[in-house]
Length: 358
Image (cartoon, rainbow, N blue to C red; front, side, top):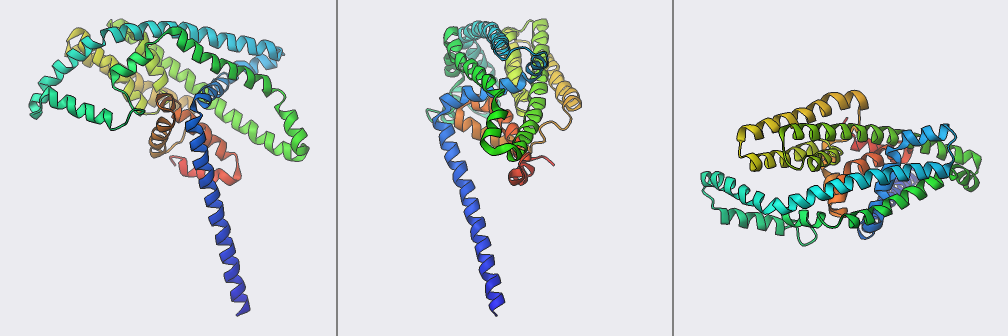
């Protein structure tokens, strides 16, 4: 009898420990979400800077092997990123400003085409506008914006964009400056035996994340470049804008590829009034996305993210709610990075397996 009571007591203690453990994890998640949401102005550029550093891992490692001084490495990498951001920022700013100026004309053509389709459904344009307005209002003031308002906010001063980018460059510089002394600090803080385990886990995380982000950035750049070339050959307006959009949205598997095809096809229809040309553009862009996404990317990246489609969707919704549009663009890289990191730690490995597609 006494043994049974002891077993019951031990079972209750173990169960209590599990409850405390799950409650602790839940508390950590809730507090982390609150901090990320309220300090987005700080964590957004920090996240972008971290992803840039990982994506540029190959040239950074090459310069380190060539014994390039740390200070010079920082200057070269930050200067290169600043130059690319300046060039693309200038081009995109010009394209977005011109697009915003022509947006009323495109909206008028859109509703003219929509009216013909709405008649088949027995709806008027005013009713469709009311439905659209209710849909947008349902997100609240801090949610999604109508297309016109969003484009207007993006088409601000180029120097405002450059000023916001300075934070990313500063974070990059400090991250790279502290990278060389990290190992010594860990050894000093935890001792050589424990530090070896920590540094080995860090090495595996860095290798896995660099592999994913480096190759994904290269593949996304190829996709954006092919989209840009195709649209230039078709004579579609704002080809540079749609190429950069394809590059950014390619970080969102499946969903991003679909979204990136819609705007240039719509612009082709509004620009030329030719359904045949719009269909041709849609076929070419879809073909590019399918070849790159279904043929090239799996061969280059292997298993790739190995994220469940449900996890991809939930991460898109979560990061979009936390950080808005920047969060949506960063959602999959952040989730993939989190999963890769969790795979390297024994305690969090079961959660990483639950996030995988297999």
